[in-house]
Image 1 (tube, rainbow, N blue to C red):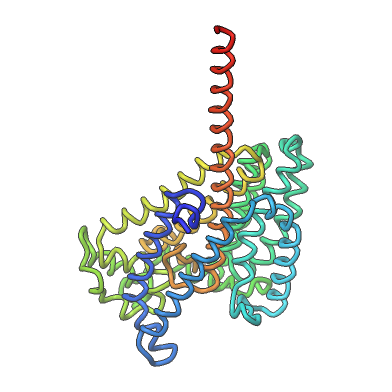
Image 2 (cartoon, rainbow, N blue to C red):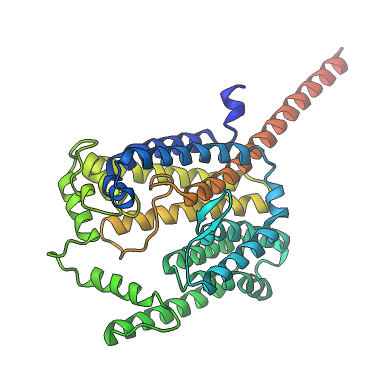
Length: 393
């Protein structure tokens, strides 16, 4: 099988994914040591090979999904929405974030919800494209979005915010009037801001949100950092400072030996320590190229569902990357968001691969449609030339 037939879709997106996965393998091997010893007392080799298998499995997932007609994803969007809603409700009732299922293993239902909700909102807007600007469409979509966000919120504020913002962008791309969203966004920001301010001042967390104390502590550490504390945030800053412009060299990290989340939430800081600001810029540029290609695919796609799905999933992945990188350099408080396609793999890595596979499915369909259009154009030109020749002779 030719490579072009195996790796269907946008070639530049494939190259970006390849480069990110190579960076992932190198960075995870450099940074996973302390976590490996704390987990099973062994070296990093075993967990590295587990990560390697997950990365390879993700490639299989992307290849398989890229070969599916993307319109089929629309048909199963409603089912996926209700399944993810049930899983989220179960996890909320159990006061947990992780679920274990046969064959699948341990995973976070919120990772499924991130992908499914975007596809579902894209489907609903495609069906209602003539009424996209009406208040009734906005309220209808809000009724579907709100339960997902509210079910994720108690256990994972950052993921709830990411889901909300991604859905918000899909609706903007889909023609929902900005005035509806701006009002809701302002209210949401005001409510969250007031709640965080009150909890910071009083030192009390909400009993309704059991993790609110964690959120308050994270914001407090970010606003009032203690430079003498041996925290993940401070070690990440030290790693970045050590990296400088050119870095200490791949495999020469020092701070990853002291950080339990060096392979996950703070892997960007380790990349900077080993490759310097040059490596930091390269990673940022790769994500930016990926997002640019997604937006370009959205513009080229003729179907509303495909356009909104690519734009939404691309936005979700890009936003998650920006949040993770911002946390690593101290611009944002700790959120727990991984760096897409680079952080240590688990089911979250594979679910992001599902999003990428859907994007490539749309890209493959665009290529096929444009190829057919070009072929028809060539045949039409030949027919016109033949007709003109026959009429002149």
